[in-house]
Image (cartoon, rainbow, N blue to C red; front, side, top):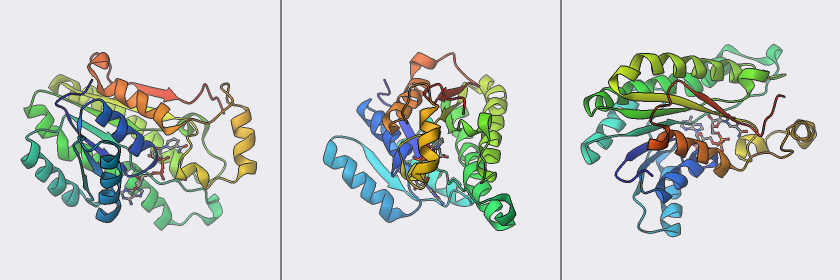
Length: 247
Ligand code: NAD
């Protein structure tokens, strides 16, 4: 579904991002994954190449919280490949600290990665996409924009901002041929969820209509659909992939 496309996936070393990278590779995209450190990016690339040595995958590690770092890294991807067709803004951190313990520094750190990086990466790539006649930008939202969280309020706040960015940029960049959508996962079996105590997770899972949390591959399928020509007329959409959760 993605033959000849170059995709950049932030947070592509593990979890949902890693599943997106693998799904895109199986669909014949060239994938550039971003890690928080070059060593973890390289390790992910090595592991993927043991699955299929013919896959084209490379790793980079720009500081997503600094625009100049992202701009420079994406520029060298453009120099190597000539185009970036798909950008997946997926890197993120969660926090569960109660409001009374929330420091301004923690608030800024969550917003820098979960919101500002989405702006930085999109800003760094959209001119090239416009010049080539179009592209696809996919953001990672969350079901917490519907439910909020009992603690760790910067996380749902940031994800609500990502929704705002998604629908606004869909309107502004649509005339340039750039589609902007988001996938909003429910609870997914990744490192992020492993830090949630079982006594908190179990009652949440029991309330999900499908009665289980998601495998990262099930989230990656939604990214593949939205990146593909099957979604050519879809923009400004926030696709909830949460087992029907109304938590
Ligand atoms: P994860 O912790 O397994 O992966 C997070 C990814 O972000 C990793 O690849 C990591 O390298 C990257 N990252 C973290 N800090 C970084 C930094 N400072 N600089 C660059 N990259 C950094 O978590 P995940 O569940 O795979 O999360 C991926 C996305 O999905 C996040 O945006 C998260 O908010 C969102 N999400 C997750 C769930 C869930 O239940 N797991 C639910 C809804 C949304």
